[in-house]
Length: 125
Image (tube, rainbow, N blue to C red; front, side, top):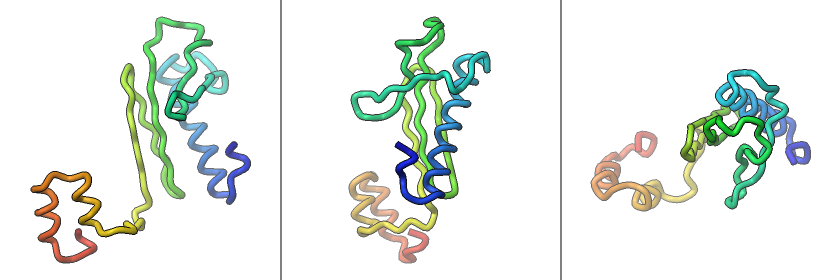
């Protein structure tokens, strides 16, 4: 529950994120014809929230997928029709706890890792 979260800024950010999801989905899905508060949500098998279409009044509407991410200074919401989407935002000041090259080796191609390894300045890397 968002109200049990610590820190007023965290609560405020989470509430704003929920409001953004509801208003955005209401605009996409119903062209502003329903109250965003009336949207029902459930958790999928991965624990992520999704629109609960079981109680939808209009089954002709295409299924909307959404994802939301927020930091202390940014909220981002992505919406697609018919296919899942992911989004992630992070604080600009975030530092990797581990070596950046170890991170790159896990997610980047060998060519990209090699290019990254040639950048000497850690800030630029």
